[in-house]
Length: 495
Ligand code: SF4
Image (cartoon, rainbow, N blue to C red; front, side, top):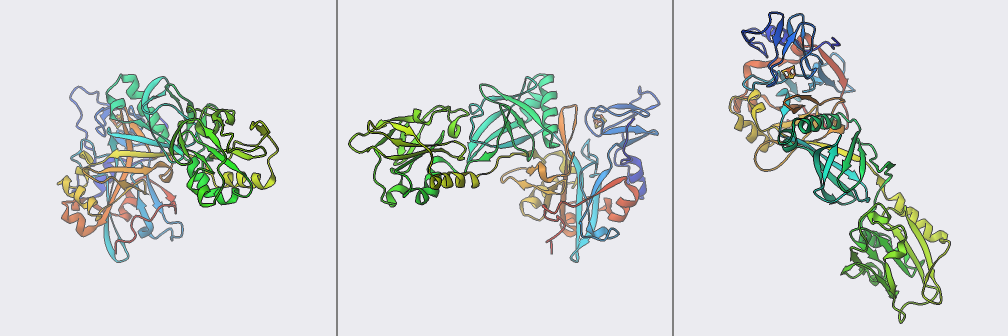
């Protein structure tokens, strides 16, 4: 059996006098003698010696139930390796509290800036969780609410388009439990892979094929996305109007949502630009701002057009004039063409003057690199709270009062307002391979709660289970990694 040295459930429990083992699986009467039962999740695997359970996270090592990955400890890069106050116990590899009444696997006391702290560490089993994926692109990925498929199974849906990004909602209890067994299994597989920053191939019904991976450029229909747009068409007009007005007589910034027309736009009016007489397709919203100039697609500015002139209906002959200089450009500057009106008021493609090219290039310069970002969203307001306190609502209140800090693998978690403990965390800020799964199916993710020792006592914490860092280091199989300085140190600023 491939096995990393891990937490032996009886070792740590036995090491603390008077405390019960963290997992005390009671063997069913009919179970073979050489097996042990894991009760770290509802599957209750019976594991023969030398074998792993169904999730590969627990095994039978010499007759003892053992977490196959060591718990991950984190140390500040600048710290003296012997300074245990500069270490943090993460939930990665820590083990679970299932069947829920047990104290968390690690409840660790520490002292920082003369303040006594406690960190309660566990791996939560999340049935209610999902991943929100933000894909920086103007390209049309598919209709809102369309199903997102992974290996043919529906695993989520397209949600709103935000400013320069398309959002997907993937996973969730509906797909984990509400469909076929295969749908639940593949949803769980996809979620774990995304959380562990692996690439996932997705297909959107009626839309694009995607490859998404946390903090990597998205690949849309086989093409790696490069730029996140500078703004909508209207915003692009506003930003660059002054740089254009003495170089051009008209600029159209093509955008699937809000196409901008410089001379009509308030920015052009403030610059006293003369009307150009251009008549655009689509629905005029406000001066110089047009909706629905084309259908959505993967062409210019997230529309389906390849020829920008397709969105021009015509020119007002009383206003337009031969020789009028027209720039058509997309919101990323990737597509841009320069035209001059001939005597018949027909736009003729012409070489782009250097000064115009410079501003087009500046649009590109102002685009950030396109990324896919993956956020884990999980409900921690359920049974895992019992691993922290005997009165769970006090933990919820303590978090809401900002007395308790929540991290996931050391990464700061945003706690949604309202009821419950709904955590959201960027998986790119968590240690590698932080996520696991169990075949119920559900996702396993690390979570840590840090608070002052007095506050822990006040919320009914398991005070008799508090270990010192030295006990963790001495008795638990562990792996030390360097703290990711992108994250705030969770033990700081309690003074
Ligand atoms: S699937 Fe559940 S019961 Fe089986 S080994 Fe994993 S955690 Fe234990």
